[in-house]
Image (cartoon, rainbow, N blue to C red):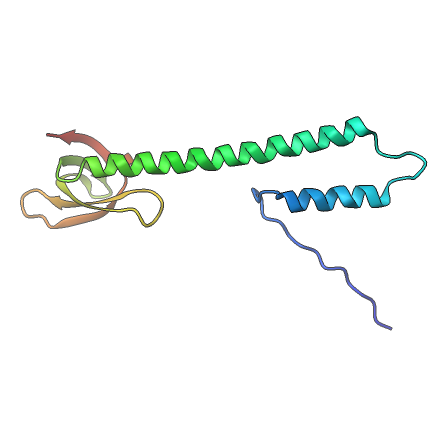
Length: 133
């Protein structure tokens, strides 16, 4: 005797709902509703309005994240060639910003250290303590 095991889909925290997901839930509600007690039209419209608001909020959040990322990139470009003081695990360092890596979503600076000390890479904005002319 074989029994079918229903598949379970795990959702990750923070996963966004799509319009397709909402429509699937709605169709399930309509399919299994009691024919003698149909869904109230006002409740139905309230659910649609809530989902629309949620979807718009997610879009606004995505746009703000993009804007913050672009602003960080612009700030990073503005300090190329400038001398900065940074805090590292080895203590404070001073160097000139020689390049910027934008591949990881947040700008990472590379410094040419003062006094012929070589280069230092992977510096974040939070490590900068001062920017000199």
